[in-house]
Length: 153
Image (cartoon, rainbow, N blue to C red):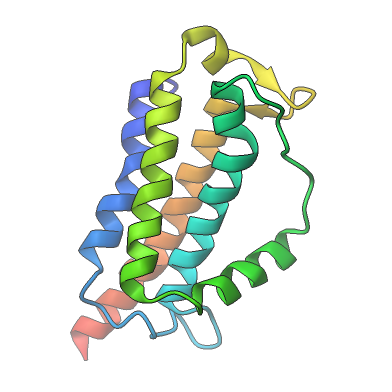
């Protein structure tokens, strides 16, 4: 699963999944006391936006990388707050936009840029894709479980 094309295809699955769940009630929490579907989609969108703007696009365009160590909990809380300012349709549009920007950018990188390590060895495109594919799958499973429960009621 280290092939760039395979990783990009798996990373692309999030967009298809978001379109599959478009008819669900996005105000429904994924579990008792947990985020709503809307919150989860906003959370993933904001991570995509952050990595695209701070790291991926700058590397592709030979600009300065602005990736920083951040407080994940604060970032995630801010992502949920941000999502509350967007309609479902706006969130879907932005989700598609940023995920596609990442896919296009990484897909068009020359091999040297793709395989290099950045930020003192803490960032590589392969590890980024693997980490976020796993992250996507975690949230997709949560939403699939919710969908099963919704369908059985």
